[in-house]
Image (cartoon, rainbow, N blue to C red):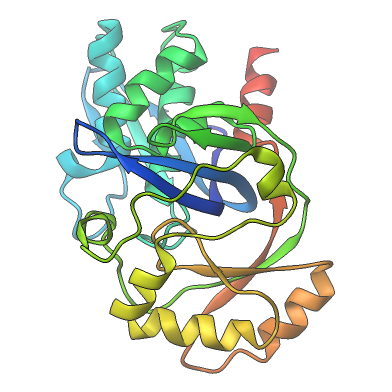
Length: 282
């Protein structure tokens, strides 16, 4: 009998402002994270040694570069754990699309192994480990929709509206590092308040840069804008639009040209990972 599955949900950046560049080279951000009810699944298999083993590694990704493997090793080292684990990843989310799939997988690995290995770390301690793996890992450990600042790791919980989203997946990879290196990127947007976002300020400072450099993203934005207001999540490549109900989103999806791929998902403000963790804790 296989072990139970653990979810690793997608996220959207509902807004992204770059408010400055820090002395450490990172950029200061204001952003809003919301989760989607679509997720990767992870299973953790007991091992009798202390090896971290990927049961079905992602093609083209070396094991030591895989975020699940790195997360397990980081937790092992942080807690002095002498046990191993087999990690089975059932991948459903697109890679490199700005939906946070790899970061979410790493977060779920940290949360699950913290429980399975009996590490006893608090969420904040797991977030500190996760931040070393990637700026998006802490929000998936946090597990609540949030207004975020810093490099995206300082959270204030909020409750964005629960829309249905049509998400398009352009056939290209957008490098976050390359986007942030572009000289024409807006780096000093005025800071706004949470109420400004709630009243409709949802711009993404990365969108003009990504649109200019990636015609596939421009095509997706132009098509989606015919049906609703199209936005970019993170640095992309995925773009999305909000709809009042599932039927409206699916009607638009049916009109999608063959050159584009997409899916419909609902926004959720509490990660299913927290519910999964609660089941095991009780």
